[in-house]
Length: 88
Image (cartoon, rainbow, N blue to C red; front, top):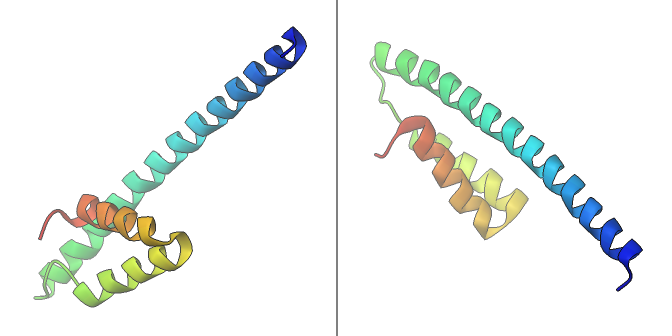
């Protein structure tokens, strides 16, 4: 591999990693926003005499992530649900 090719590859990797870091920052921010919105929903549901968790809604979310991302999407959705509502 020539020095030019190596330098180009290193720059490509550095640029891509910088982009990944920026995407991760956005994803974390969106998850934090989702957690806050979920808290509002849970508080309203409890205040009106309902349960904290709506299992049919959670099943819809799991299905949506599975359809979009395959089997790992289900695990991702479960993690999101746990972050947003805590363990049940």
